[in-house]
Length: 162
Length: 88
Image 1 (cartoon, each protein chain N blue to C red):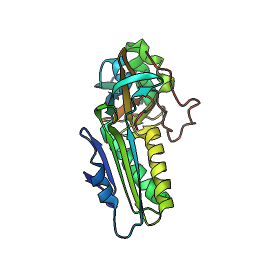
Image 2 (cartoon, one colour; image 1 turned 180 degrees about the horizontal axis):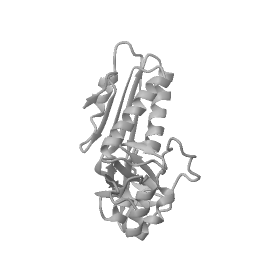
Image 3 (cartoon, each protein chain N blue to C red; image 1 turned 90 degrees about the horizontal axis):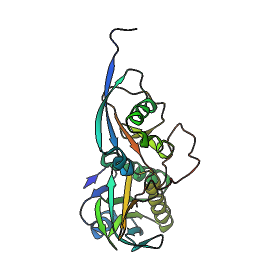
Image 4 (cartoon, one colour; image 1 turned 45 degrees about the vertical axis):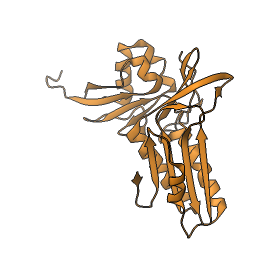
């Protein structure tokens, strides 16, 4: 487990996420609220029954971007601690793929920071999901991360290649 | 013509569907000094024409930071071509 100078935790894990441990990590007597986000594998995608998912990450960059999200959340919102964990590899239906826990003295900052963290993660962290169906597999449509010094992309998603 | 053209070696990484298209997850490339991320991609697309059509949907990174396509390359850079991200 990586713990930064501010007690933020960011993790990429091949094994199941210990959600209770992350909640316990962010919880402290000075806080009055914890907000968590539990993202898990749905049993269908665009009407097709999903068998399982396979997540791939550019691990060094993904951890660095997750750490940057934690730092930015701390700058923007009056939170105490934040933990962000994402799975890699094969995930079955209903398994948690991403988990975020945020503690704060008051609930509004915790809600706002948690929402900011998952939205920013989905847009900027280099992780890719391949969806497996009974009749084949596809890389999920995704979002193009904003690149400093470049105009925003005209479209957010690309056509499936195959 | 300079007789001693400098070359630089960079590491190139491919992810997601791009890895399937290229058939590799990483390779080393020797490039002429002055190369950019764009010219590196153009080199790679010469070898694999299918790659070229992905260009509009890709972003690039240099040493784990998102980088514009006109970024000049230096020796030992780690360059990655990243399809739209779909974590979460």
